[in-house]
Every structure is written in C-alpha cells, then in structure tokens.
Image (cartoon, helix red, strand yellow):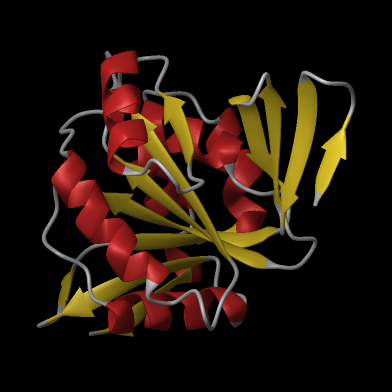
Length: 200
C-alpha cells in the first residue's frame, strides 16, 4: 500500500515494514514489532567481526522462522562493520548496534544487545560470532528451555559446557544494570542454582 503525502513524499507499507521515500528515493525504513512473544538472538561480533560468519549464523537462525517469531540483534564495534552488514543484507531487517565500550568488548556487547531486544522477547540466546558453527537443533533446544521458563540454559556436550547461552527475559534488567567488571561469569555464579543444562 502507498500513502502519497505530496508529489515528492510517499510512504510505502509492506506487511510489517514501512518505507519513507522522498522523490522516489528511500531515506528511512523500519519494521513494526509483532505484539506477540518472540525469541531474541544476539550475535556478538564486536571483538571478531566476520560478515561471512554472521551470514552463516543468521542463515541457521532464519531456518526457524516458520516455527517462531525471531528477533535478531547484531552487535559490532564500528561504523565500517555496520556498513558492511548493510551491504551483505541489503533487503533484510536486522537490528545492528555499535558497542560503546570496547575496552571490555564481550560484556559491553552483551549489555548493548540486551538493550536492543524486542519488548516482547521472552528470552535471548547469546551467540559469539567467532565460535564454532551452530545447528538448528541446538537453537531449538534452547528455545524450548526458554519457553519452559528456565532462567539460564547452557548446552552440554560430552559433559562439558558449550555454546551458546540462553537467558530468560527475567534477567534482562539484571544484565543491563550489572557493572562491567562482574560480567557473565558473575551472573552464572549468582544464579548457578537456576542453570539448566541442555544435552546436545
């Protein structure tokens, strides 16, 4: 649907996406958030950026979109990385944030990503872009753990903790307000009784 304001200014609606055009050239667009529970995926790429790895990760996440409402956030370290993602995903809508404290890139990126998740998110899966490849079945097990109400869910393989980690939305404010010197290890210690392990 097109809404013509005048001869130069047009608003185009495509499903949940709204595009503003001036003289036929898009200058701003956004996508309406679904008012239904969704699962957030925060891809942490501020420390080791690779558009190829991010593309591979998103491909795995997107394979689940027929079953779940997905909320994808990518955290990078600079404008150059952001521009690269716009080139790689010219027609896709993903939230890309620039981490604001690179002296502590990991936890700063986590906080940056949590701030950007959908208000309808029931939990977030933290994915480090430099870790080994993901599989849809691992993500589905973590999603199921979030839906069950588990506060923290960690995959286990051969009796060892592995990647990625999932957090319930009940911990979002805790993470956002935590001092950088404490980080994820502090949360895992504090809530160790609330950790559930997912066998993979």
